[in-house]
Each structure stands twice: as structure tokens, then as C-alpha cells.
Image 1 (tube, rainbow, N blue to C red):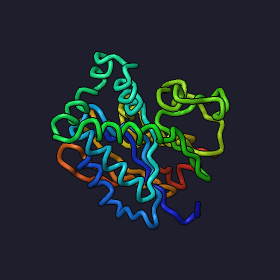
Image 2: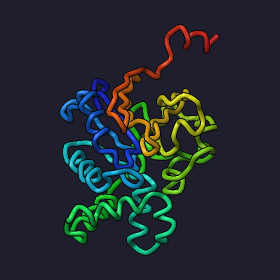
Image 3: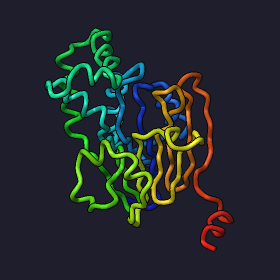
Length: 241
């Protein structure tokens, strides 16, 4: 990938399609010059899961990369009878199933198309300077030895440990508000958390790389915030002293 291409990353939409579209509009997303990377959890808990998954599929046809999240895997496991209704619905799956029926669509056709789409989603993407994954990686093991359990579900064992990698890991899954008082996208030196709790009524955030610029849209009122997560030069110099 060309060093001049702008990478945009977003995660954990949870059905908040309007805020996501607004965020892409505010970043002037252009698939002819930008690489959009989506990190999973497009569905469940939020208001428009089915339409969000449809839109994500449209974006991939234009060049975006859509990674799988644990909620996509819960959906296909539920439909295959491998996950109980009680557990899936407790994690917000009832909103997604309700969507399928309320939209008046051919349920078998739409579900079948979505299951096929999810089945084709990779769980991790590696670029020149970044690794994109839904939940994270196990820092104690080679990435080549890891799979769905780590990429879709890991939390504390990843967030609070140095990765030892020469690439920054961009992830979601764990809302920044769960381990910091700052609601902004979190830069941890060797990792960046871009889950800003859309399902909890906060923001859908789009991270621009390599600049570190963030465009955040509130899911309730569509208010837009812009900020940068990269340390200033003087701060970075102090850290090296």
C-alpha cells in the first residue's frame, strides 16, 4: 500500500448507521484515495443492525476492508444453533433479530447473504505500520499461532501488556470508558483503542492514520468533535528523556 494513502479506521458501530455515515461524510471519505478499515461489531444493541451490515457490505464492494467482530460471530453461531437465544439476546442480539423481521424483507435471503458475508470476513489485517483487529492479540504468543479466541475476545491480557511489536495495533471491542476517564480514542503507545461506546449512547469515532486525527459523532444528537491523539513533539521529547 502506498505511503500516501490515508487510512481511516472505525469500530463497534452496533447499528448506529446514521452516526457512522455522518462520520464518513465529515472525514471526506473517498474510496479512490482512502483505505477504510472497519473492525467489527456492526450489529446488536443498537437501532439499525441489518441496515448497517448492508451498508458495510456496500462499502467493501468499493474497496473497504471489513473485519469480523465477536457480535458477527455470535449471530452466525446463534443462527446455526450453536449459541443459545438467552445468551445472544443478553448481548443485544434481540435488536438484530427484531430488525430482520421488522424490515419486511425476505428473511432467508437477507440472513443467508449476511451469513455468507460474515463468513468471508478476515479477523486481522496487517499493513506496513499498523495491525487492525477487533479485540486485540495475545502479546505472549506469535500472531500466527492465534485465532478467533484472541482476535475477537481478548481484553485485559492485551490492553495492559506491551505488544513487543514494531507496529501499532488498532483495535476496538473494549470501550475506552471501561478503563480510562477520558472518552476520547485512546493512544497507548503501541496500541490504539477506537471503541468509544456507541452502544452506550456516546460516539462513533473514525481515526485517520498516520495523522492521528479523530472525527467523533455523537449517536444521539449527531454532534461532531475533532481532536488528535498523537503526542505533541515536546511531550514525546520529554518521554524520551
